[in-house]
Length: 269
Ligand SMILES: NC(=O)C1=CN([C@@H]2O[C@H](COP(=O)(O)OP(=O)(O)OC[C@H]3O[C@@H](n4cnc5c(N)ncnc54)[C@H](OP(=O)(O)O)[C@@H]3O)[C@@H](O)[C@H]2O)C=CC1
Ligand SMILES: O=C(O)[C@@H]1CCC=N1
Image 1: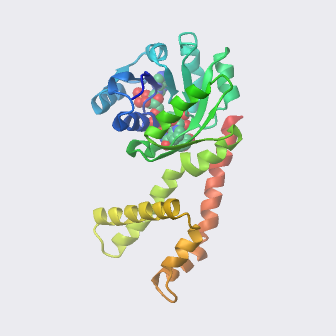
Image 2: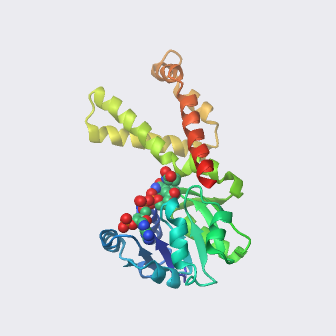
Image 3: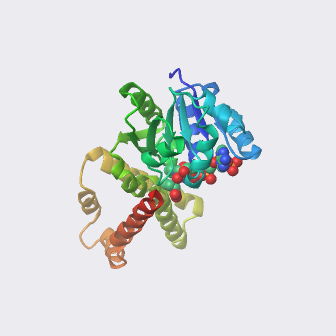
């Protein structure tokens, strides 16, 4: 268990998923997590849900936190940093999770040296299955980075990457759960079309996606080889694969994800 106070400024979709992961994994007791938000409705909800301490005062979180997550929308970064920059402990490690907010830009907002880790998590943190990427700045020591890594590992997997990869990471993992939910929803809609009750359709579609993802991760086989093993000659699967190819599934997905990465680059300017 970590002897560290973890602070969250902002606890919406992403912040609350990480808080759920951190407290659910038992990495730190709920009493060592403190979070702020804009409205009392959100802080009350988060307090009830996770048993952590909450406040509407960002400075209280900033003063107490050893590891401070900035979990507000990108356009609020400058404003929130202005509010907290003079009260954050100089030993604290700031963890930014926003799309398109570079280390240089965030350091500029603080205006004095800070220990900063830029990250890109995803919402499956809530069920301890996040995929996250981290880039530390030069002020973060290896021990501090290890602590931050242990927090991210508590709710999934993480890797340290060069900052130049952060836009691609946003496309392939930060935003990608949304595309996968659309795929699951479409599979379930088809099953309902073909007569299956809706709740059962979501279970069959989602478990199949989970199983296929585990096959890629655990067998080490190329996704194409795994696909081939499902396709019997003249069988059912190849009929579906041919229909997907006709509709350009792979180039559709590639173009969509590339658009996401390009948007992240544009937001960084
Ligand atoms: N959603 C996702 O899948 C991912 C999001 N991110 C990044 O996470 C960040 C947050 O996104 P997301 O969680 O989706 O956004 P949400 O809108 O769901 O949450 C934002 C949170 O910030 C709070 N907030 C707003 N203004 C302030 C303020 N002045 N001071 C303190 N808290 C404030 C809101 O409070 P209230 O609820 O009271 O309004 C809310 O709790 C973004 O920078 C995004 O790029 C990164 C990876 C994935
Ligand atoms: O849509 C967004 O901008 C955020 C960043 C990654 C996922 N959601």
